[in-house]
Image (tube, rainbow, N blue to C red):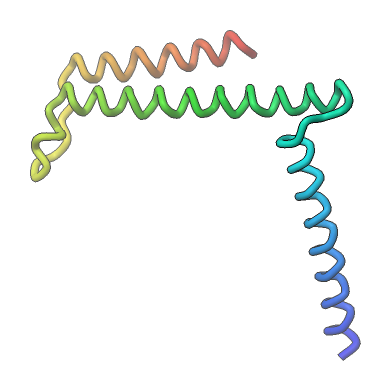
Length: 105
């Protein structure tokens, strides 16, 4: 029983610390900050989130365009076939994204 009680105390302490950390993160990212460092962290987070969202939307757009170009959307029963121009579009977009990523590093 002592082991079970100790385990419950540890879990309760962990829960309290996680709640405090979640509140701190929420206030750091969503509420207006007083200091410059708080504003910098918040701005960096939103810039990063915007960049990731933009890259995901570009990837989805490229895949949809490649599928549309290959007419695979209209042939649901058959296998997906990429035409050469659809494959070139996908390859060019992938290379552009990779090169942008390497250029930023």
